[in-house]
Length: 110
Image (cartoon, rainbow, N blue to C red):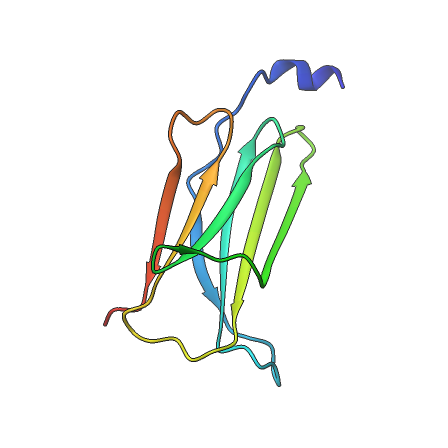
């Protein structure tokens, strides 16, 4: 625990949002993943929005601590309905080290 005293607070890295191919024979049309790392303390929240409306189901979140005592987190959503091209998905992070919420978009505009 001595190494943790080196971290009063550490900013999370910028969010990365990417799509992942759904598993074979899955009912999913789309899987989106939002990742960040290198933050401390652990109390970080990742929220998802679809066209500005918060998504409250179908979300998976994992957090783990690395060897340096910092944390990384990943959140994914699975869309089981057809995704329209103008749909905008937003991943938003909140953490005590941030003065404002950070928001990152993933859209399907061609």
